[in-house]
Image 1 (cartoon, rainbow, N blue to C red):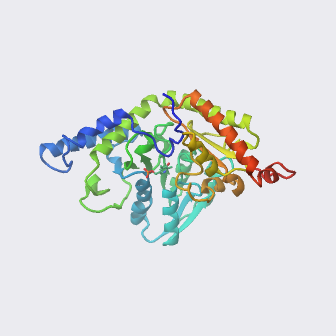
Image 2 (cartoon, rainbow, N blue to C red):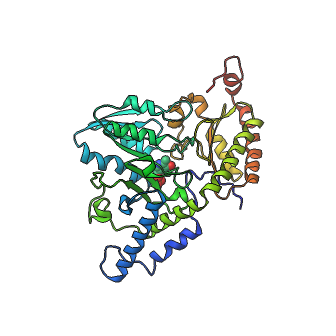
Image 3 (cartoon, protein in one colour):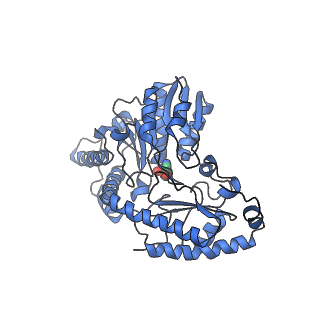
Length: 397
Ligand SMILES: *Cc1c(COP(=O)(O)O)cnc(C)c1O
């Protein structure tokens, strides 16, 4: 145990038990699940067993409500394109939030330029999308509401149950991106009463390139990928049997330790936040009220570039992220932080520490010991730190 990897929200290593469960379906059990002979039927049985296990893990009523996909991104895309092509082929109004994952945001924005009206609800300063703000955005012609269950960058958890009720009252479908919630916090599709939910395997120690869309029975859907009609005509292409088996196994294993890990990780999360904020001035937790994921600590380190911290930490063997994984490498401030109102100059100094199974208290302490001098040195070299954050009118969030 013990790891300097603090980026579990970006991806996680496969659990060896997941790899082991998958291997036979690459080798001796290699049959095509759509073939009628024994080898094919065996593969189909494994696929359906995975579907059942996965469905049970998210509280779905029927295994057929699960469509396996190539990842969370495909599930998010399908939630928009596949339903809208059936329920609103000629346009209509869509609602999502301004701090969604790009797989939702870019999809919604594309539709907003191609025949649909789009409203981006702003999350508030505390990091949450408020049901009353969604309510105010709803219209008679709203067809789909998509709000993430928890945010991948700042960890805030939204009240999707209330938002789904409002969407349904207005006659709209409800989708939620639940990629970061799966296996981390309670998540039950029936309790939330959503029509669709997206999931990704590699965030829960499963394989990359595997995801799932929960599609409530009866939800009208036009397959994004057409062809042989697999996944009961909702996703063509020979199924990734090993991937589905891996995802279901990963979810089962995550749920076994979910409660104890949530307690342990929340304590580590608070240890990072308390440790860094007590040893450095002008550092704050991005969000610190309301429901939050146990494993994500988002910090705003004023007066330094996130990228500079990231690279210097990497030199010492630590993996963390600044903004979302996709936006690092570019100098644009995170759209998530800007959406909750973090000033651009502060947003540039964000660090996301996302914790997982291998992290220990000792790792956290080592990390803090490494970060403190890095920040002090960068600030000493900064032409703007003192002027912007230590003078008479410091920039604040
Ligand atoms: C990782 C992630 C996705 C994308 O999942 P992939 O399987 O990598 O395509 C979507 N939404 C959120 C919130 C994520 O964190």
